[in-house]
Amino acid sequence: MAPTLRRVAALVPLRLKVRAGEAALDRPVRWVAVSELADPTPFLEGDELVLTIGMRLGPADAEPYISRLVARGVAGLGFGVGLGHDTVPREFTEAAARAGLPLVEVPRETPFIAIGKAVSELLAAERYEELSGAFAAQGRLTRAALQTGGMGAVIERLAREIHGWAVLLDEAGAELHAAGEGSARGVETTLREVGRLRAPGAPASLALSGPDEHVIVQPLGGRPHLRGFFAVGSDRPFTPVGHTIVNTANSLLTLSLEQGRGRLAAVRRVRAAALRLLLAGDRGSAEEVVEMVGGGLPDEPFVVLACDPADAEALLDALPAFAAPWGPLVVVLAAGDAAGPLIELAAAGGRVGVSEPVGMTALGTGLEQARRALASAAPVMRHADLAGQGLLSLVDPDALAGFATALLAPLREYGSRADLVESLRAYLACNGHWDAAAQRLGVHRHTLRYRMRRVGELLGRDLDDPAARAELWIALSAGGQRGWPSAGGRG
Image 1: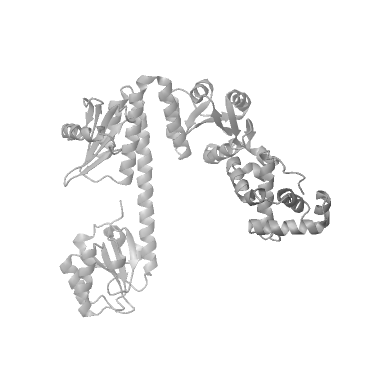
Image 2: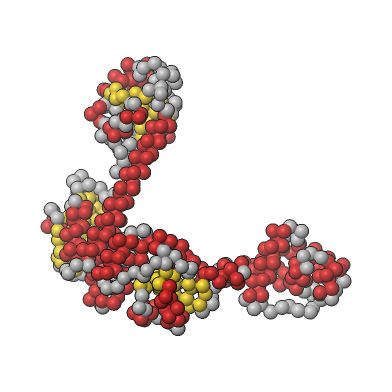
């Protein structure tokens, strides 16, 4: 939630004085706008604190100026004194008082930029508090989900988190759990909307807003096999952070409904959630989640394995370490002394990329290293060994092959008897020395010069340009890595 103008005006270092509209100081300030225009409203969105020294404003402008600001929905007006005006003109304070618009006097000693910085810092602090609250709420919901009767505990916890009500229905529309004041009304509302969510092409969720209540209704499970319906309601609109909390509850409820299909499947998803918490920096909640389903996290430092197995579920069940699904991959965190056997076990059923040793704070870096190593296409590749394979090993093989094919296509399709690709390769390998390249090809240097002019024309590149030479050499090297046949000996 944005800071109020009352909070901004109370900042002692700013030395602001409220001259009008004190009753409306609790309006949120979402930004600070400095303008000396007679009408700044076309450049405003609303909820700004507008700052001006009144350079272009006279007494007769007060009423229309204040009226335009009020109509635009600004949070307030800051009038700087000591430059264009020694004090705030009486006409402006009276007009602001009549309109109920807060007006604060900004002394000459307070630069406008100081007010902007102060509001920016308050906004950042508010956002941090919101995100911290969201992470904490997610942790509480996750712990509730792991209790006995987890679905009911999640509904009870969620109702408290949103200061409203929450209900859970099964796929037939029967009430499973309800909590919070107004939940009986919430069940009726949810039942009315279930038909819309069952229809083909239905939206992923429904949002209903009225003067006294805001409701979100979501299906649980994927279509066409819906496993239930879930709804929440509150007397206040849902913020982005609120939506995040609701979506977390949806995920946890879906997970609980899927538990009947096997505890192992549920454990895999909880591990995935724990991995996300670790990547988000919330190690405490991740450890609690992992301990509740049995298991733990490795000691630091550890290595990250990115595995591309033929049977992901079998690998997840077989590995005696923290392992979690991550998209199409399986991610494993292995302590140094256990890494070797785990790599062998994972490699028996697919490819493995291995990061360098990292700590929890560098887990994201380790995961990226493991994924890059996996992209090398080797059965087992360590990130530390990529450098020894050259620069091309760091590039996605398929993307590199596509680049090389497209770049060299005009040469391969050229109808002359001259082997332009091999001539270009020899020319680049000899660093542009005509005699050496011609000798390597067994042709006269004038023949090679002609061929290189033709290459430059076909490719639209200047072969004297080092950047062009580098691109062409990479394309030719990629062709060699992919096993492209040499056109050989037509010249």
